[in-house]
Image 1 (cartoon, one colour):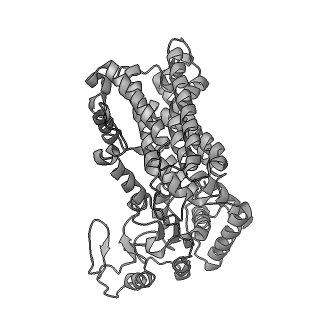
Image 2 (cartoon, one colour):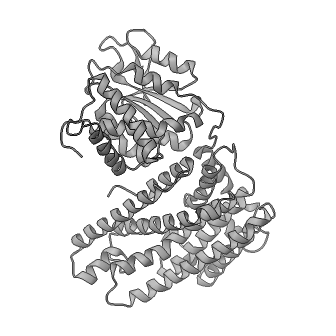
Image 3 (cartoon, one colour):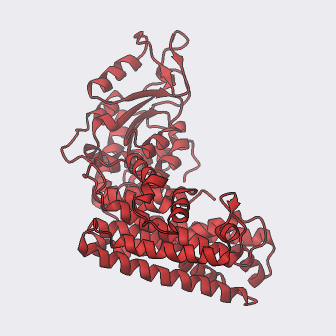
Length: 493
């Protein structure tokens, strides 16, 4: 973007022109939140060019107003008690301020020397929580934990610039009120901007789901007692329960439950039949890990001996096969509506075949002297995408929206799986003939540094493709979920 010093327009008439034009631009372009940083930059350039304001250092301010315009229509779906008013330390009267502060922020004493007590009272009257803090670094974590679902933030342009990438990656619904001047002295903001942000009404059609609540429900399921309820009593039960409930973050079942919650945004809780669906997804994943460890002859996973080292090869193979069988049995659980069971089993079977074909293609490729980067990406997709796809497909089937979302979830999983594996390749410290880095070294005669640089480029291309794909999503809760899922995988490389 522009190398000019970025600033907030000091003329209130210019700020108003940008604000109104941003709302018009969002409507005319049919944009839905969230947008990636690159897309926000692109649309901000178009916005300012249309106002003949480009080249004046207002680029970042234009991005902020565009982001505000994107999120404002979504705010009525969020209860006011779930919207955080975030105020900066620099609003306090210094050095007279008598307030102390802790790890979270300022502990205001309400002395009346600055505007913080008044603003806090206004938010309290709306049942909105208030935090006075130096940065918003913890806000994305609070959103993820379900403590809050949106932010109205007053901050200087410099702080907003620093926090923007993380907030966008975490798809935090937000309305920003920029301070008119940077620095921490004699700061001020446009009170009308904050008044508008606080006044966004609370509608009746609230999106009640909380990803924090979803994670808590899944964490409770993946305990020995929770898993035992669904595993038949037999010789393999104890080892199955141990394998399913210990280690790992149970990330794929959380994808299934979180995606269902996004697709059913007004539902206050997960249905009971989602438990066997989520457990089945984990059965398939843990079985694939047992078999993968055998195929790669890995001695450790999660810092402990792998299953085939601990139990012996025949027993480990048998346990992996049993978990696959239990997964299909769970997809036919009596609590799951009959019309969902066939689709769940069919899609899992297709994914199992694809996963096995990907592994077979990797074995074949390792015997070849040269493997192209395109073939390497294809293997990455075959090996990694099916696990993401089954988790998302299961959620769509359980929510009754599979036909509508099948194409999107298939494309998203393919790109996410490839990106995930490329990033994993960059993390390899030892030689790995199946990694993109080693493939590029062998096929091009490059050194490791050059091969890593090309792998980074491939990874970034996959990342941009994912965000471009998500622009097709008009369902805002679903788009938020997919952005957050992508944000977990797509690191800044």
